[in-house]
Each structure stands twice: as C-alpha cells, then as structure tokens.
Length: 208
Image (cartoon, rainbow, N blue to C red; front, side, top):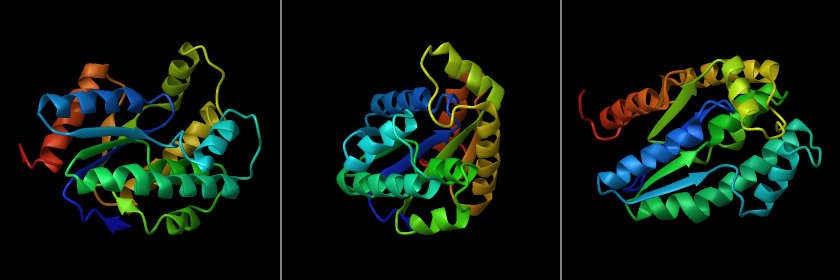
C-alpha cells in the first residue's frame, strides 16, 4: 500500500456490522470540528459510483454475485472514492474519516471465500491510512444490535459469518501499519474516549 504523501490526515473506523463504527465515525468528526479542523466524513461502499450502486443491490440481496466479482466491484468503487473524495480532501490539508475501507473488503471477502492475498494485491496501489481503528465486538452482540434496527439483514449479517470475518480482522492487524484495536463493547461514550486517546497519540502525538 502507498503511504499518505499529502498534508491532510486519513483516518479509518472499521469493524463488524453492528460494531458501531458509523456512530463512532460521527463522534470523531464532531470532535475534530470542535478542535477547528476541516473534516470530511465519508463511507464505503459509496452511493455515487456505478460500482457502489451495484454493490448496494448485492448487499441487499436483490442480485447475486460470486465473491471475487463482488470484491472487484468494491475495488472499483474504492478507486473512484480515493480519486473523487479522499485524495482531494487530503491535498487540501483536511482530515478525512472513512467509515470502512479496504480492511472491510479483506475481512469480509476472505470470509466469503475469496483469497486474502489476492484481495490485498488488488488494493496494493491504494493509500494506507494514517490511522485505522478496528472496533472489537463479539459477533453475538453485533447480531443483537443489528436485529434491534428492525431492518432486514444484509448479505453478511449472520453470526457464523461475522465470526469468520473477525478472525480475518485479527490477521490484518499483523499485516498492516497504523492499525489499532479498540474494545467496542463498552458504552458509546467509553468507546469514543478510547478512540480519542488513540487519535491524540497516533495522529497528534499527544500523551505518548
């Protein structure tokens, strides 16, 4: 992967479906705004690209796709995401927070039967985040949270599948730089306090 050569900072919040990564990404955005930083909060898959629109249909189980074809769509969507949103913001010295990134593709794609090394190879020309925070939450808790939403489960939202996905996340923490695991089973405020400490330490070099 390519280290961020731009003036801005690239932060990713990732984790299992139901881990709370979207909530924590919003909290982090608000924190940066309060500190007078320019912030862009974004999400993968995007809703803008043709690949992103097709991914939405597959994840909602409206159409089917084999594991590798699905990950090729994620890669195409990510390429446009970087080109159109992430890199322009980094060039403008903004902090960009992405709710999911290629770590999700690796963890979920490998759990779905795609080869992990091949998935990493497909993304090797993309940016490495300055900081990735992966929320650790038991798959049973994730499923309970998902069920409380009252919506139909998406393609990967099954306990056995999420357990496989988490095993892949653990592998990824040993393969990539700048990855930190945070306990996501505490209260929303406690989880964010952990995230804030990591951000202050790793991005702003405070409290080391």
